Structures are given as structure tokens and as C-alpha cells.
Length: 321
Image 1 (cartoon, rainbow, N blue to C red):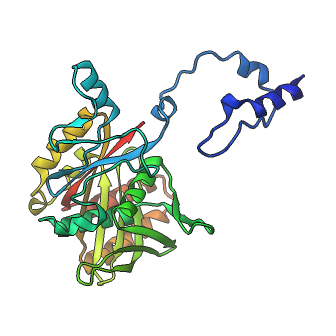
Image 2: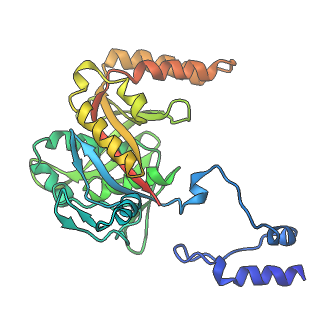
Image 3: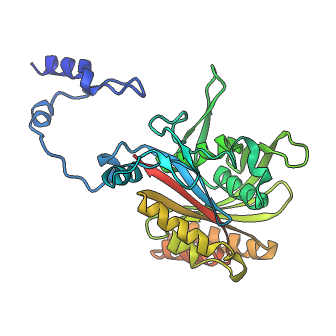
């Protein structure tokens, strides 16, 4: 009987996931009866209560809001108030948001798409913002041998959405080695696509207490850069006095994104002095190799000192559908 139940489970059309072309697979028949008695699932993980599909939909860069997408929360609020759920009055456009063309990317704004960001007043800041999205992560690129398209394996759906967004906006991360990250971007001088390789020196990993992650890289001009992304309260308190130029506007946009039901992260960076990095790297590696009970505290102390005096670039907004 249990074998037949397993066959029915494997062939049940309601358990088939069309997006990945995967049917249910009964790996054991011992749980059939228990599974059949489940009628309520209690969960504290939002990913199990939603589709766990993260879509890059808006961003704030250099104090300017980009992205004219309408979130499901905004659509519902508009319906309840008797308005049109698809009209963005600020930009006077009507946009269909039901089926994004690229998984993880539901962003549209002609001011920055198709290379138009180079014509924006703060083009240099936009370039730094998109480069950070393409470099500050732990994703792994995979190239389809048939189509040649690059897809990404990431630790979380939102991190994958950031890398996809960078690619769609012209900054394509395509290769990772143990000590390097490669991406393609539009060269502002020649107007052609160029490949850049950043040497990856350190990854300061995300955890629930840090609420941020950073990478330290050496760019192709030889500059040492610390690139960070994290929660607004964590990053804002780490900004340098001369790095707060867009803070008020960015905070305003982050509040608007939160009201629209979006998940936000703040992006910031700074240049690192050579001598400062040499000392940090020595202490950081010693802390990582420590076997003492306070190993994690030592690592946090080292990263906390490094992730300060940042210059604000902007914020990302991702919809968790």
C-alpha cells in the first residue's frame, strides 16, 4: 500500500512545480500517514508563507528614487482606496507588473536602463552603486552551455536578485575565483563593454547580529575598497561625516519602500589606506585562526573597526512575493 501511495505522490499534478519542472519525489514511505494528517502549518519563516521569490523593484541612488514598479501592497492599498492599482502618478505611466521578464528583476526606469545611467547628473555614484551590486556578494555564476546565459547560485534569493539586477543594468558578474571577481560593464570613455577583474581580499560575512556584509577588494586601478551593504540603522551609524550627503533623502525613500512592503538594504563604501589594510588583514587572519572561546568576538571587533567612515551610495528595495 505504501509503495502505491508513493507512486501517487510522485505523479500528483498538484505537487508538480512547473517553474523548475520538478514533480514531488517520495524518498521514504514511512511518513505517508503522518503527512496525510497534517492540516495546519505553523511557521515563523516568511519564506514559507510567501513564494520566497525576491524581485528587485526599486532603488535610491545619490538621493534620487528609481524604479516605477507597483508592489502588491501598493496595489492592494489603491484598490481599497478606490484608485487605479497600476497607475504611478509621479511618473505618469501605466506599467504591467504581473509577469517580470527576468526572474528576480521587476525593475523599469528608462533613466538608468540600457546604459542611460551615464547621462544622469550623479553618473559616478550610480556606477559605484551598480559595481557594488556586482561585487559585494558570495554568489556563484553558472553559464548555460546551450544558451550561453549566466545564472547565479546564491545563499539567499535576495542576494541573487541583486546580482541579476546588476547584470540587467549593465554590470554583469560572470566569474569568481578564490581571489578574484570578474564583471563586464560599459566603459564611460569608449562606450564599449569592458571586462574588469577585482582582486577579492576579504569577505566580512553577514550574520543576524552584524546585519551587514562587506568585501575588501583591490580594483583594476590598484585602489583598496571596502564595499558594504546592510540594514539602514547599522550602515547609517557607520557613515563618515563627509559620507552623509544623501542620507536624508535616502532615509525618506527607505521609509517609503518599507511602507510599500519592500525589504531594503543600504549600500556604502570607502577607500582603504594600504597601511591600515595590512594591519587589519594581519589581525583579522589571526582572529579567524584562533581556537579560543572568544574567536567570534575577536572577528567582530576587527570587522567593526574596518566597517566605519563609510560613504553612502543609496538603497535597494526588493519585493518578497
